[in-house]
Amino acid sequence: MNDPIFTPDPIIGGQSMPGKPAGARRARPGLIAAGAIVALAGIGWLVYHLQVGRYQEETNDAYLQSDTVTIAPKVGGYVLNVLVKDNQQVRAGQPLVRIDPRDYRAQAEQYEAQIAIAKANADAVRAQIGEQEAAVEQARIQLATAQSDAAFAATEERRYAPLAEIGAETAEQLANRRNKARQSAQQVGIHRAALANAQKRIASLRAQVRQAEAQAGSAEAQLKAARVNLDSTTLVATIDGSIGDRTVREGQFVQPGTRLMSLVPSSGLYIVANFKETQIRRMRVGQEADIRIDALPGQAFHGHIESIAPGTGAQFSLLPPQNATGNFTKIVQRVPVRIALDASADVRHVLVAGLSAKVDISTAGAGK
Image 1 (cartoon, rainbow, N blue to C red):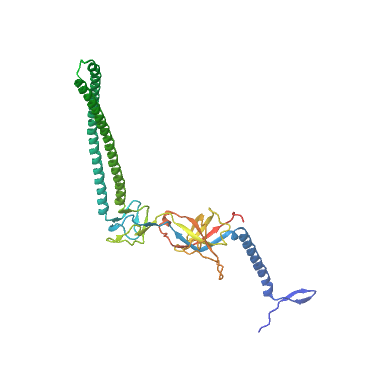
Image 2: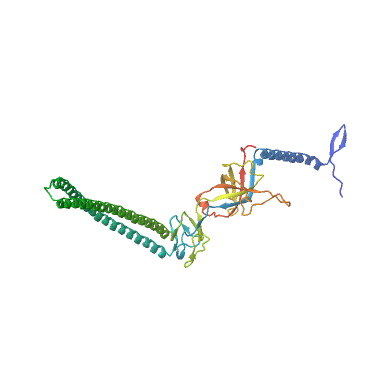
């Protein structure tokens, strides 16, 4: 091993002093500079952490989501036509599936016939009411005639009574007049009863008209329901979007509520980021978020907190945890945070539901 090379120190007092190695003298400024850089970096990191870093909350447990619409029939029947293909873009109102409408069309026609019958019955009863009103008028005239005859007979009886007493008229004549007066009074009662019966008949016929009209109204309500079912045999898109998970096939028999396909909206994508319960203390609605999507590396997206779930993901699971047991193990829970995605239409065109993402939220200014 070679001895280090020493250089003579400057001559002091006519003599040379032994000096330090040249490399050590050159290394000292470098070490000082490196130390200064490290110190400045540490100070910079500390300042960044105090002002920015400690307010940054991030997670990679985040996914693109969309409010998918499930396409299901309201009525049952055999599928006549499937009018869309897998992954096809559709517009709101565009027909998707047609179910055989013949049964529902026949039902609607049946109710239309019932309406026609009920209306015809009502018209027939109204005609009877017209006839009965004429009969009432006739009974009223007959009653008036009978009352006139009864009044005349009563007058004749009163006129013959004093004459019979003085012998100017025979007792037989007076008896005939009294008999005729009684018969005339009875005729008045008969015609009065006939008039009342004719008037009650009109009330009964009017009740029949109301009954026929009610039957027509019931049939019309059933017809409306039948037409709704008939219209429901054609399933249409409720929003603009893409067809996904199509399971329906032509000739298939479907029950009401059977899922036939899903309709993923063209717009309205958002991100659900599942943050740890220890990260949401300073999170507030409206805070900005930086987003990275795994499918589009190198591209940065922006968004903002739209809402925070009122419970953890475990709380809304099918079987919420029951921790009142002896073998409890504490697990950090996750809270879903919905983040609105601010992206252009061109970028949204390539984004699909379910993609993984990384979200970084700045909680500065939210307080303690």
